Structure formats: structure tokens, C-alpha cells
Amino acid sequence: MAHGKRFKTAIDKIDRTKAYNLEEAVKLIKETATAKFDETIEIAMNLGVDPRHADQMVRGVCELPKGSGRTLRVAVFAKDDKAEEAKAAGADVVGAEELVEEVQKGNINFDRCIATPDMMPLVGRLGKVLGPRGMMPNPKVGTVTPNVGEAVKSAKGGAVEFRVEKAGVIHAGVGKASFSEADLVENIRAFISAVSKAKPTGAKGTFMKQVALSSTMGPGVKVEVSSAS
Image 1: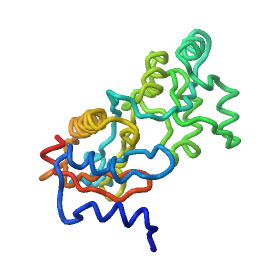
Image 2: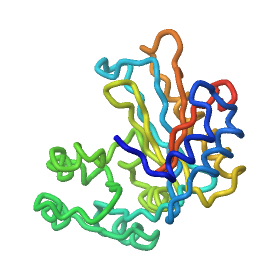
Image 3: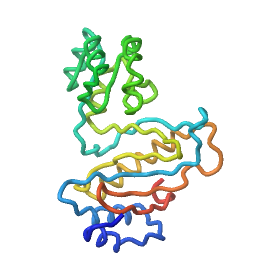
């Protein structure tokens, strides 16, 4: 794949054989995020797990202290008082049976969904639609909860869900290129801490093998794991 002049200029600033400490890596990522839009800063973590085994699955949620920089559209499956609570908290889409029907038709105009426990028998029908998109409500990440108001505010405020992929890799956005270096470092440390706390019982040996940062259109920068923990 041929890279453009902007990418080649960015990559020349990075020693691809070196792992940088977190502060240096963040500085480099900000310097090389030169696209005409506010690029997302992304983290990729290679973990010592095999998620095909149930006792090695890594999944959770992280509250980014400085927010994600994204404006998420949040849907809530709820009825009556809980539906009103969700609307008051800023949910973009709220409904019950009628919302389930819309999603079954493929009308998914939201980025994250939350459900009250009593709605899960209905929402369970949407597994084939929402599951592949990683949007199925799950109590382990706080998206199946009676406290829908808190969950909506959390999602809007910068809560990031994570789930390990088949190759043992976790990807997530941890801020924007416009964030200060200090804010990005704080978000990244919070995210790495959340993943560390989600270490499964079946993980053996080194859990966190490699960490790298990149911007949406920029090259990757390896990070010293010890400096980021």
C-alpha cells in the first residue's frame, strides 16, 4: 500500500524499533496527527490470552476521566418511570416493544444501548442484530441496569467498552488529537488500569504483552508497557 507525503513525513519522526515511554509516545502521536479533522487517538493492546476459552475472556468498561471526545447516541430499552429517567438523563432513543421492532428492521440510529433488566427477555431477540456490532446490552459492562439515568450519563460522559478479539487484541479510542498531552496520558493510564483489573483467572504468564498508540490517519507508536501501567 502506497502512503502519501503526509504519512511519510509523520513516520520519519518515529523510530519503529523503539518502545517509547507513555509521555514521549503521546507527544509523538499528537505531532503526527496532521489530518484536517480532529483525529481519534487509539490504543491497541496485545494480551496474553486466548479468548476462545471462557476463562480467558477480557471484557469491561472504562470511565475515561477526561472524556472520549465523541458524542454518542444512546438508546435505552425501558418502560414507564425508567423510560422517563432515561429521557431526563439525555438518552437519544427510548422505547420498549416498538424500539425492538425498529431494531429488528435494521433501523439502528444509535451507538450504544442500555436496557433495564425486565426488558432483557425482549431485547434478547436482538442478539443476532446487535451482537455482531458489539452493542448487545450486558450486565458485565453496566449496560443492563435498573440505574438507567446513571448509565446514560456515563455513556455520554466518556465510558468506553472494551472486549478482547480473537487474536488477543483490544482496540479502543482514548481521546482526540485536540486533547492536551496530560489529558491523553490520564485517559490512557485509566484505560490500561481498567484492562489490567479485568485480567481473567485463566490468563497465564505475561498478561499485557504490547501496547501501541496511533491516530486515525497516523502511524503507530510502540509504548513501554511499564511506563503506561
